Amino acid sequence: MSRFLSNSTILDRPVGRSQRSAEQNVSLSAFSYLFSEMVQYHQSRVDSVSALEHRLEAAGYGVGLKVLELLAYRARDYTRQTKLMNMLQFVSTTAWKALFGKAADSLEKSIDHADEFMIVDYAPITSTSVSVPADLGGLSVDAYISGIIAGMLQGAGFPARVTAHTVEEGDRKKAVFLVKFAASVMSRDATIIG
Amino acid sequence: MSSSASTTATTSKTINAQANALWQKQPKANAEFFALTYGALVAELVRDLEQNSEIQAELDRMGHSIGIRFIEEVLAKAPELKVSQQFMETVDVVKVAMKLFLGVTVEIVTSADDQYIVKMNENPLMVFVELPEDRQDLQYNQLLAGMLRGMLEMLQFDCDVSISSSTTTGNKEIYELKVVLKQVLQGGAGEEYQEE
Image (cartoon, rainbow over all chains, first blue to last red):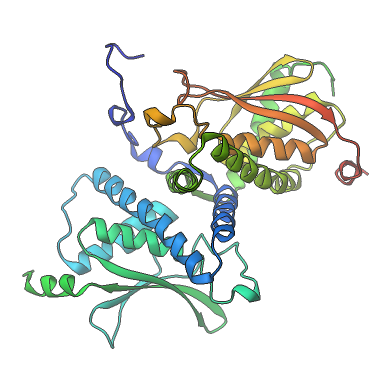
């Protein structure tokens, strides 16, 4: 229904006009089945666990870049994060809530390495319905989420390597996303006052 | 239960109410995240396969794989749905399934004894999507078509499911999936779902 002869593209349509559309849902089953097909597809095209994780990360990376833009656009008081801790807070609360419906369970700083941080989630949506067969031991499909985190950080100017690990805690497991920032980020952050 | 070709207004309302009630209880995931994940998948397929026909075939196959499993969830959550030998009664199952899967209410219009059209006026998969000019013919939503095909197959109906119009090809706002019955399958699986 364009009034003019020019093509109206998707860029002209309002994106998520309101908070309402940001909170629209599909079933968890839909996501799980889709993700399962995605993992199986990638699995059919590689022959090692690390290559599979790499592909999942790459898939997540593009999503992360887009999620960052989307959330930045939606936040009315958006100020571009320049400090490291603020960016990590953004990822572990705002972004996590938008994607998974709740904030991450915790954000931790490594004692041994100043450039390492951990985002913890007890029930990541990607692996709660996945069981990894013994011959693929070590595979973490949460690599998709690692990719998303990495994409977001890269897009915001905080390049980092992000890896997903499953850690036993008592009688339950948790997913730990280890974020290791590039040296340039750490040295830049040290010079920022405030 | 009448076996006439079209659903009456009252039975249609009851099915929608039933589907809505079931939807309230479904665990949810964020629709935009779902759309972005699907987009990442399609982008990967485009990179790997390049030809529209191959990409669509792969999406259809994935959808089919999802459909044959998802139908069990639908029937388990809605045991009052009648699973019968009548093709037209699959309309109710499809309505409930689409609601349970995508949270979308669909309208189904019968176009002949052996076919109907599933109309969705919103499609969560497409929320951020616009196809580039050189890919205008790509059926982005082929996964949904495959899914319907898989579900109907498990109900013993071998069907052709195609996408008859969507905003990416043609300028309509409504997304339509056309279901045409090819043959009724013989075989034992149907009996498991029948009432004792």
